[in-house]
Image 1 (cartoon, one colour):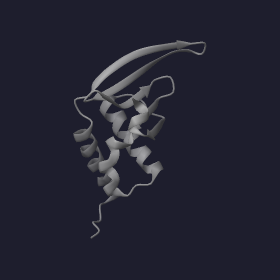
Image 2 (cartoon, helix red, strand yellow):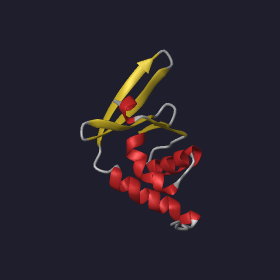
Image 3 (cartoon, helix red, strand yellow):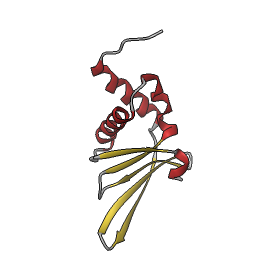
Length: 109
């Protein structure tokens, strides 16, 4: 059975799912310095595991695939998934995101 969801409601539904999955996260903030400069890295942790990493020098967000598994019901292509997750992160954490990388949850830890 297929359910038709209006495009303007998809982001709202995705926001609700991500809020349920990715709330009450522990934030570990650390600065890294090398020859190119200094940047902030924020590791978001849930149950002792890193679920997201944000780098402010590139406005880059890494998100584990397991945390996004409930979004499979929307049958989104990879680019659309990156866009909607980026919009959710920007509105939730008030940090700019230029690129979202969706990678294995094991690779984050």
